[in-house]
Structure formats: structure tokens, C-alpha cells
Image (cartoon, rainbow, N blue to C red; front, side):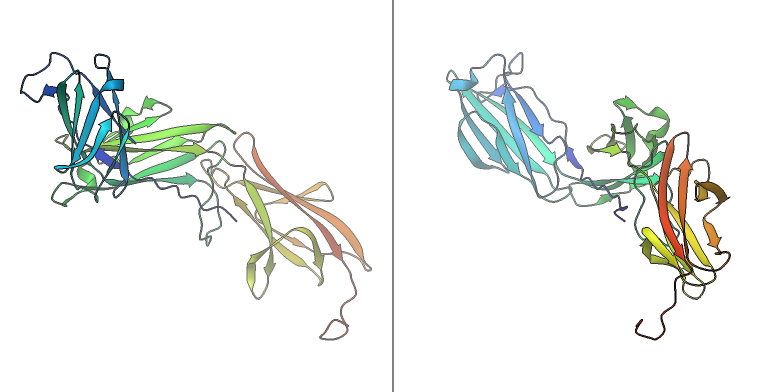
Length: 331
């Protein structure tokens, strides 16, 4: 039913570091000759972080740069973006960058410490009780976004998620009442149809030494509703949804409707059955009993709705009174 929605992101931590550039002779500059940018801001464990360099005072085009990781030089040449390999969650990667311009070397160092964090979107929407997946993000509904943090210090010790501080941002606006220590959940309103709603979280330890973040974009989807046969012996046949046509072979047929990805903020979605265009009944179930003798056809339709305008429909062309097979093989 393509209703599973798990969106997982991985968080990494970039430690703050002193950005004052220092020439190798020990003298401090009055301003930072160059800056280092790390991309992505929160690299994943066992991935690579891309370092790029900018300067308003140095001629980087004619400068020479060396990059050392963990005390080992990995690059020497012209100034260009450099990929730095990282270790596991919580491991510290020390980087020293030296840029020599006009025969004067300048050096900066930084430490990158990747961490694992997953953002999970849990739509507050309809789905059958035994459905193994998860509904899509509903129109006119809410989404519960959960940050699952696996933050470790340099020794590998896990920091309890309840002791971390969470700062949530939705559509670029900080959500103060959902942020704070241990607040790893935020409730977000579904975006408008055909639009995205960015959600991000910044996580840090209480002493501020461990910092990281993750983000995702929420996109609402069209709801759907399916009709199933409700067999008196086998129960609801969730293994086979009914589409287009359905033959009523006995004296009656019981059908069941299951709405997917409709908001349940105001309770269960409203279900309305129509027989030959006329309202028949409401609710998830309907029982059809052909009247009279002979063969015939009828149209059955269903609407499932929630909120002001979110709606899904389904329809069947019914046939009844057909001659039964005379033997086991249907001959």
C-alpha cells in the first residue's frame, strides 16, 4: 500500500574551535586571514567532511596549502576543497590546515566528532489496526517528529537522550515551547498540498561540548480508501482490496472500508456509502442484499473525509443474480 513512511537522518557533531589564525612563528594576527567551512554541517560517522576555504585578505589563488589529519599530512598543493575521512560516532578527528601566502604561513585547527541521530516522522493519520506499515502525512493534519539521538563522547560513552537539549525549528522559526532538555518530540502541522515544511533540530549536551543537528522536509500526500470483502468465515480479506467490479454470488455480501492517511485529529474519518448515487449508510461496513429474482447490476461508491476538504473515494460496479457453477471446476 506504499504507506510506510520512515524518514531517517544521521546527525554528526562539529566541535567549536578557535578560529584565530596564527603564523607558524607564533605571532597572532589581528584578524582571521582565512575561514574554514565544513560541509555537511553535521557529517555522518564513517563518512567524509568537505572543507572549503575563503579569505578576504590572502591571495588564495597563488597560495600553497597543507592539510594534516591526526598528525598525518594528507594533502599539499593549491587551495581547494578537501575531503577529510571521519571515524565512528563520538570519535574525534583533528585537522590542521596551513595556508602559505606571500611566504607567510598561517595555521588553523579544528576537531570534527560525528554523531548518529535519526529524525522519524510519525503521521497522526488513519490506517487499519493490523496494518504493518505507517500512513503517509495527511492533509489538514499533524505529524509527530521524533529525534532519536545516539550521542557519544570521545571515550565512546553514550550520553542519555533525556540529558540532551533539543532546539526545534519549523519553517525557519524556533519552536520555544517544544524545545529544551529531554524534549525530543515536536508536533508539526501538515504542510499545504504540493508544498514542503522543513523541520530541523539542534542537539547539544548540557555543558555545550557536544553539538549537532538534523533536518527533514515534510510533504503531505493524497489520502486513499480501500474496500474489502468481509467473509463470514475468514473475516475481513485485507489480503485483497476490491477494485472496479464485484460479483455478489450469494444472498448477501458484507463489505468493509479502510481509509488510509486521513487525519484523525477530530476522530475517525467520516465514511459515507452511496448505492446507485443515493446515500445508503455511514460507517466502515455495509451489507448488500439483492432483492427480487434475476440478474442485475448496481453501482456502489464510498467517500472518506476528514477536516474541511481532505477526501478519498472508491467505487465498485456490482453484479448479482449470476448463475452458479454446476460443478467444482466451474464448467
